[in-house]
Length: 337
Image (cartoon, rainbow, N blue to C red; front, side, top):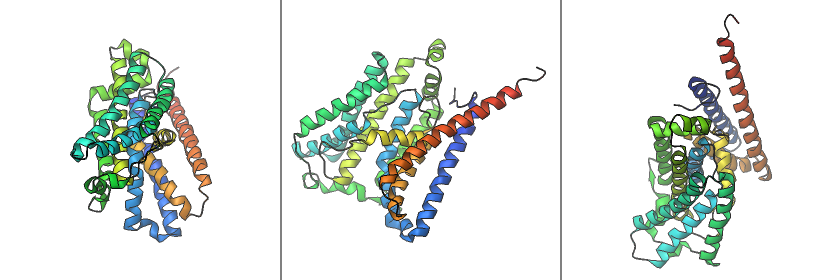
């Protein structure tokens, strides 16, 4: 089984390729226009900053895409990332002798537990994901506020080796960006190569039909929520390493930007279609818009309007391509009628 998008796997692949090429073209045009205005936009330092800026959004968009493909959504990712980041800082403060890898694993585990809570409520209790994750968005944020109790954890509370992770580069590429690339490749490989990954598309396309052919729908829905929680935990750890200042407001409002990155990247909001590669391109495009608008002398007020327009164009383009493909397929099968 493969992702759909217009009546057949081949049509779905074609739409996906058109969408991803379109995002790539928009990205190239944006970078070219910004560079003409300010040649420093493509300096080594600016590119590094841009990649670092896109890292967290890319990781979160990958997890969100896997959830969206199953015809669900996770609105709690910003809160999960914030809670994981604060947990990471608290572990350093409370257990100064704890090895850095163990602390990082602890931060990821906090995110995983949050993902399990979401997954159980959606898959086992069969409560709509929108309702569940809207509730856990506030619940996890509330726990974060209660835990922080107005405190702030600063860079001085964390070891230099951990804070230096964001400054480590390989061939000029920041280590966190390489981690994001690894996450994208691993998720893309899983969705394409494993039967359970391909079945996520079947579940998102038509859950009732998926049950009829013997796919364990509840289990397939549960797994992406856990993965999404783990990736939000990883993003929280990387946030702590990069910024070094943590309080209960970390990640506030990020969930809508994450959903936007996935949708702009071609992941259908109604499930069954899209790739994590497109979501990663969507995250990179949104991050580039964020960095480019000030250089293009565009008021930051317009940033949200641009993102909203991109979402509308993406959804409209998906619909247009799907209708055209379906019409062509119907025409090809009506010989002699």
